[in-house]
Image 1 (tube, rainbow, N blue to C red):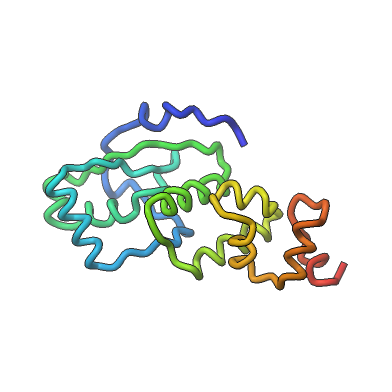
Image 2 (cartoon, rainbow, N blue to C red):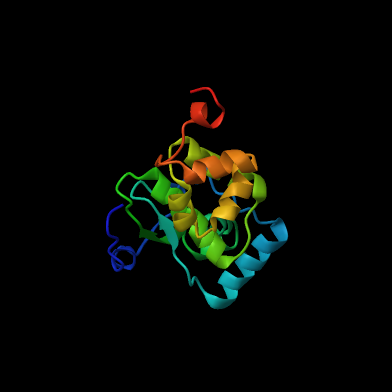
Length: 175
């Protein structure tokens, strides 16, 4: 992982066309219509206070719900079809983008269990270590275990092995 320039995102602040952004395919955070109405009201009452965080290709890392309400009236007209964005460049590291989405969400509130399980499983399948997942997602190893779908014995074997990640064949006794 490269050293992040902490000033870079805000230095990239710009207003762009709402339609130039796309949603990511891994966000586990869902918000009901009532909360979207509250978000819209907050923007109308306070102005736009938090930019949308995007990758260089304008895929949303954080701010999907702000982006959603900004595409609806009356915000769409009031904003002239524009949204404020800051660019975070993880240099093609999709896992860093996922970590960014999750940590933004966790810092603010809750996320859904099933999508989080899928993300943890995906990261483990890609060979990420429990230690790295724990660190990057701000979780204790026990939380990773609960989301992993492994049995206690499989997880203990994973934690005590010398592997960076794990091999499905090793975990299921097929190696």
